[in-house]
Image 1 (cartoon, helix red, strand yellow):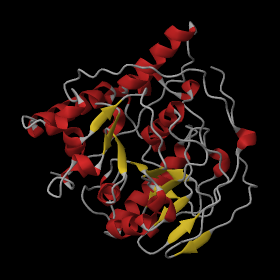
Image 2 (cartoon, one colour):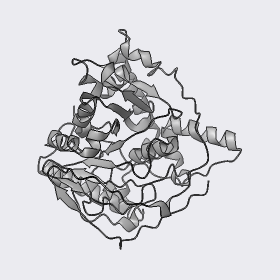
Image 3 (cartoon, one colour):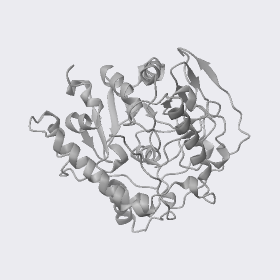
Length: 364
């Protein structure tokens, strides 16, 4: 697949609006002139519904669901994936010749600041993760007051701790919640609905174990429409909507797969919730990559910011940017790649090899 590259320019006009409780409709910029046609497929990929973790959608009602066994297996699979890349796992910040080294400088500054000022919450340390922050529930409540949230029927929310309240408010508001399995290593996406739950299980359903226990696993063949994307961030620029995650690239892959599924398009708003100290003004948009996902709205504990981002949104999965190391981590991507190659008779390109970043360490 030939990938058309987008060149981002620092000369884009910036416009920022800040309000406590925004009620005005959002007008997202049209970027039809920069669209990249996705690879012509679709997507009858059959996922492995006989996996040990997800057998059928009815499993959520199975009284025999063994939470301890599920969590142990999930952690074992995750640990195995980490071990397989351990020899290559190194912080890109230590390699000044790497074109993404500047991102690690910003991430480390934010992580260090949050720890030093004690605005981080469990799990700690916050390094190499989407940081949980003091006031995350307040930022989530502000997000729930947005018109785009109130009007959404299906909301995709990242699985990280600081967005747990967003997941709760989504379910409690009677909306469909689409949540990816952590790092996509043990599955793909699961859908949860309020009708699957009761008041005693709704909070549990917002956790990784609860998603597996109560959610309905879906594959890439699922016909869904996602009305709003909530994404975690390490740092974000309120003037441009430029965002940095924790460096593993899973949010970008999730976004790309949703584009391939036809579940989202350029008009689907992307929102992030962060602490005010995670706002930065030194993310150079001209250095962003074609698959980096910008945000339209930022919610902090003190304010709501409309970025009017000029940055084009990714149009799908950019196989020529996907390293062999990353591909080896994610089973569903390998299956999708094989599926496309079988159906088209053409071999998809592969990105250059990379040294994967270190994963977070958890204090016990």
